Length: 224
Image (cartoon, rainbow, N blue to C red; front, side, top):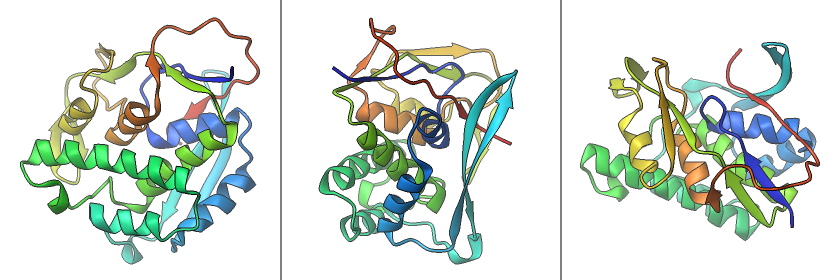
């Protein structure tokens, strides 16, 4: 049995998940070729090795021409995925993650899911992070996906398109309902709604590391 295990050392975001998958052996060229099937424009991807506290990991970052990128509604993202050339399995899993996010935003802001107008979630970098994470996991073809409990920062305020929000963000907490979490006294956003939603929809079990023979290890960096 092949298992992917996410060890959530200091939170999780979409680009951290992708960085860790690339660091563990996901070929960058394969990922980029698959992402072209989304038929998106006006962005480029940066992948580079970085060292944090003398440990080398991989940074994945999407650079976007903001003037040419709209903030998409859930229905627009659904159409984008359904009209892509991605496999049906990747389309369906990616869409389930966006649905999870839409439901969280709907609950937090008190509006119907079909009226949720995404900002960070509907921006191209989140579309790439979510779809890319699904592509990366599909490449490894694990039988099961496990994860440690999710680590959240706590206290202070974080910036968003909606203004200043409490930390953790309300949408993140909504997504993490029923998932084991640890809150630590760091006044920064450690877990994003995107990262939380990817784990919520793809992880089979949240637990301590299972007994395994390790074949590859990857570290995902979060910022420059």
